[in-house]
Length: 219
Image (cartoon, rainbow, N blue to C red; front, top):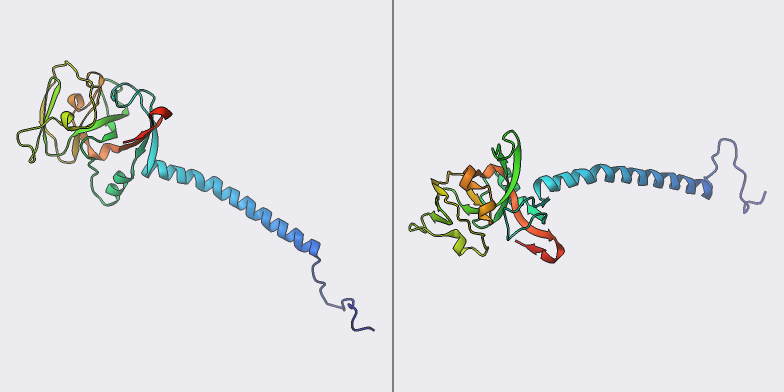
């Protein structure tokens, strides 16, 4: 017998797999990996989307004229939630800055359905501990820095639509709450009517307007 030639397997020996067998096993492994990857994507993607919506950012559409002329009906917005999320994780209250536009939950508004919660979008006018006085068109804020009072609308970079309504508000904002108002004062249901908003009800702050495209901007 020529030792240089391959010998037939003896009793009890195992033949090595052929290249075709190896290829088939590799294909099956790759198919299983692909199927598993697809399943993981289908399961994880919605969870990531829910996480981002709940804690990072969310898209909203403006419903109504209360923030004109800053925002128009049906504008598409991106609302930033990270500061609120961080505040909750650390056990603090999120108090936005004066002039920021916030989305918040209002419970039981008589003008709508008092049994339902409604999300509203308004501008922050007064902060915790400040005295707010509303007389007709004018809002005056009194605090330690301005004991003589100042008008936040005249110092802000935004524009309001004035109203000739004779509002009569004189109150001190409780701790952990804010005073809000719409930029379209004649057509806004806000703190002048329903009072202050607890910080715990704030959903987030306006970050971007993304639609219409020609009015896209950061806030």
